[in-house]
Length: 221
Image (cartoon, rainbow, N blue to C red; front, top):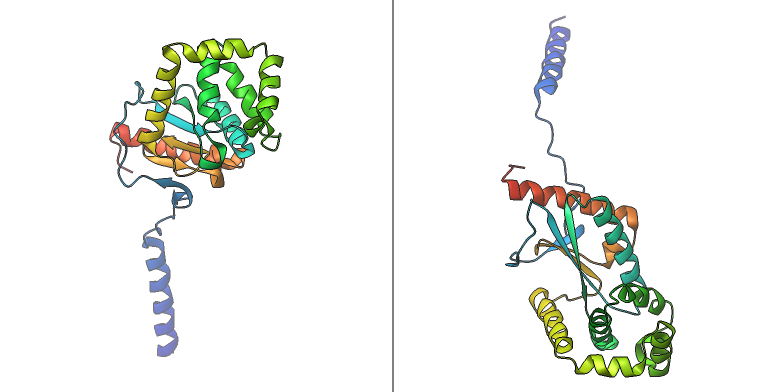
């Protein structure tokens, strides 16, 4: 009987202890190396006002995953215009030369910045024809009402090289090791391992935007 009582009291004590036990710390759904990465030290950049988060997106032509990421980020920025500001930056890698930077500057100088998005779309499914084939590039420009004479005249303008220089300055500042790459407030990085899927991209963005806004407001996690 005593043994039974002892077992009963031990069981009761364990039950009561479990009621007051601290809730285990929950592992974050996303963390550095899982969904996003971080710079060793946040970049010193000018951030938007009103506690909005700056998303700087580096893309290049002839890149299908860049097109997907571009679509997801534009949709997210449109839906959350009260929280984020999207900055698109033309970039390049060794195998893509510098055509993205030069054409992006050309479109802007001609007053047709929307052609940058169109070229990104068209070049993503052309197996590099719109990246390395001069004839294909010329045909695309002509189809979109841009003559080769207009191209040459624009390149001679003083503002054209300035746009190129400003673009390269952004690339130098962020030093994107891979393309595509999205950077939030110069601190958190998203690559193609996140930007390949819309739902996953939105979930990570929600997490990081909330995290950054709380940090800006000085809210303790």
